[in-house]
Amino acid sequence: MADKMRAAWAHYPEEIQGFLQGADIAVVKQKTRSVVLRLDRREESVFLKVTPKGQMREEARMTEYLSRRGACPRVILYRSDGTGDYLITSRVAGSDAAAEACLRYPERLTDAFAEGLSALHDVDPEGCPVVNGLAEMASRADRNYREGRADRSLLLYMGYADADTAYRDLIAMYETCEDRTDQVVIHGDYCLPNVIVRDFKVQGYIDVGYGGVGDRHYDLFWGLWSLRYNLRSDFDRIADRFLETYGRAKADKDRIRFCGLISVFNGFRGQDYYNGPL
Image (cartoon, rainbow, N blue to C red; front, top):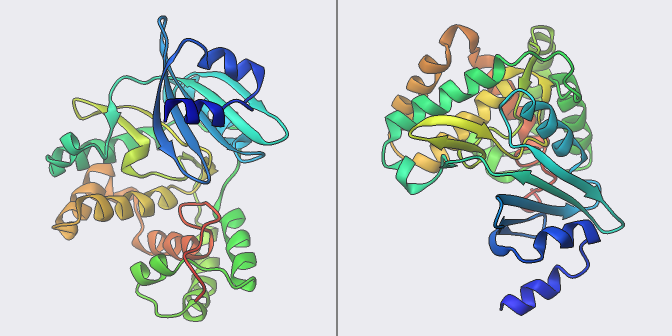
């Protein structure tokens, strides 16, 4: 199996091969859209993420930007060639917040998760290299709707039986919500596996490729979605605790719902993934 996996990595660029040589390699994730490897080397442990070509440019830019503010791993190397994108980052000490050891303590986890999001949204957006606001998201959602794409699981999560009704509600809410959009640095995929914690303190964030200057309610929607998905029980109490810890005065339920409707058509957590025709 090890030889087979190494053969699959043989086409990686020479610079990437240099990190693979002599490293103990563990497969963290292996899916069609991305592969993540942990490379344990004598001097340090690093992570290598590989995606199809053109899919990680924004992630590299956002990771570099946030790493300078102590919020993300350090970017060691980013390369793109004819077949793929390659990003090597430092390791942040801790475990992802979806680890079983964290899920056993839902209240402490919820508090840490909310505090981590509040801290991220307090980052000064000056110099942020990416804009990913509601206007940009709504434009993409509109295009996807007209192409017949919507995520079935999110439709059901939002309480809809069909995409047309959800789209009409999206349009009806757009003007009011877009006019009051705020300007914070968002993660863009704020889910428990993308938050690194240690002793229930957030140490950093990963997979920030859908981040940028945007509206905090997009992260709030996905944070609540993740708590429901990962904890699965007593959600109303947990959701209330999450919003209270984050700062209820900063959260607008209508805008959270609006961001959920955007997500129905914007791809699953910002990715072009749709689970079957409607």
